Image (cartoon, rainbow, N blue to C red):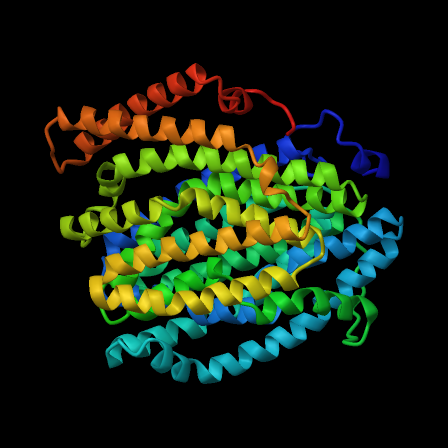
Length: 526
């Protein structure tokens, strides 16, 4: 493929392997990918609930992800590509492609050695971690959690390698590989369960995780990186300037703790003493994050390279406008979606019921789902605000802010859990993410990067009013319809409620002359 082809976004297909995307087309592609991934994710949750239920076995499986996630978060800053994109983008702006490839090679080789060593040590100490962090587990659950943790740990090497290789594609605004990665990952877990659960039980899911991470993250992004012209050099030099720069940028992410990540760790720690609690909360969170993944995460991932480019070119006015525009649209959409989720929580969650997942389990999941749904707009906004800091090559301030908020939030989780139970954990999660998002917004304002004054407050007010009226309309409609636990009836209630929600939201937004309907329908780069 010629360089001209790679450098020309042209009119190539949205699914072209080498297409360089605009902010809109990238968001569209990643939103489509996230939609398909969310569907696969929901099928995965349904399958696990149907076959394994909500009890100590699934608690152990969900808890087994915590140590691998912590190692990834504290050792490589969670997502390697976030900081590497800024470095590679600077080389690319200077026309030094050879230097960019050398930087990528140094970071990849160096951290594979470091991360591999950490994973080896974690394999040895997994039982100590499980006994310490999940003290509420009985001995059998603790042993199963340790076993599954050891199976899941190597997948972190795959995620890291894929993230580094994928950063080369993100700098070139090639998003197709990133779009396909979560599809393969979720499909791997599903296939692992379907093909192996009858023979090896819950272990089948862990092997599916590894296969999905290897193929979906490492192999796929390696193919994309080499197709784009990567010249990889097996350089092990932990003192190389590029490696030291990456460490300097990533170090705040490694030593800082963002509540966006720590939330699930804290929830699992306290819920371990309630059999099935981790699983029910995890299922509610998965359903809650589905719309967030479809829109918020896709927009966040697509926005980082564009924010980085604007900041690198010193276009600070455009940078402020781009960040505030993204935050305003996402929060407005999330407010409307929250109304839909809260009003229709029981029909939405009812699809999990079946097999060994009981009606009681489904109703408890719906309650936690409702509590989580209140904070959807805040979860959407914090992802964009964090990326604004990363694009400005400032990882220290959000790391300090996130750590302070997390430390102050932990006793709140404990207090509400001991007084209200699992419901209190969901409420503490909402309070914590509110503090985290507000802190990021205020700090961006104080550092004169993103002004709170230019946030589209009018649009947010219109969306809030439309959401409130839509919620009332859906609840009044459902009140006239009889309640029933059958899947088909719940699907009908969901369809009717969704139509009412959509009609009221659209009518109110048009009446108030909101820009949101036009932005949704119009193919235009923000």
